[in-house]
View 1: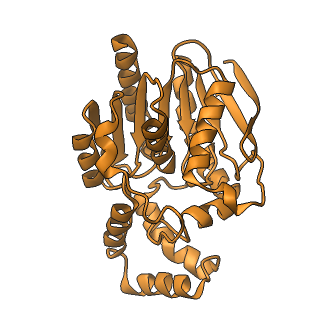
View 2 (view 1 turned 90 degrees about the vertical axis):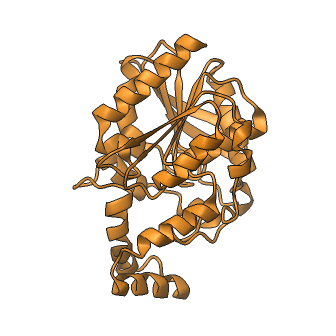
Length: 290
């Protein structure tokens, strides 16, 4: 399989990319976080047997530059980054995939830039952070009271790097982020190489406590403006709950929805055969239709 790697100049620094495969209509993959690196998306490289699949670490994490300038961590700058990466790689005809924050970024890119796309895939990606927080809070209520107390007290004190806090949130993550045991090496690498400055500035200490600049981000009422063929996919136990994706599906006219059983936020790693078959069918259909 052909593999290319390199760097692209974007506003604020350079980002590292990896391209696997060749031919077909390329698939550009946007990772989550913000600041979580591409590594946890490694299972998607299996799609490169039929088309070129491209990953990159967004600015501020992984192998990309990590500038010390908090002014860079805005949705608008990341939207421009997507546009610059696409142009630099010559991706005129394109499928766009976003996981979690990556899907939020993809939707904002579509709404702001009105790009020509063959398809859009949103995996566990919310359209409203206020609803996301509400849903995660409801899921957190399923945890034991003493666990919730540890989480809330550490967040109030600003001690979220404490091992006790990290231990307390692990149960939530194992239910709603990745249900595999052990966790995939790519997921572990994403945690190890994450850009926590970006994450804290835009999100906050955790999935269920959003205090950063994304706190009020909400495009639910604009989803009707998305006209590209769209696939919404998530796990039954995803922290981006199926009910959230169902509402998004109702609002995006040219969309379809798939909920993968026995899976959560990383449904592509937990049920790879089912996920890849679903994605390939969708991508092939949209290519034929266009």
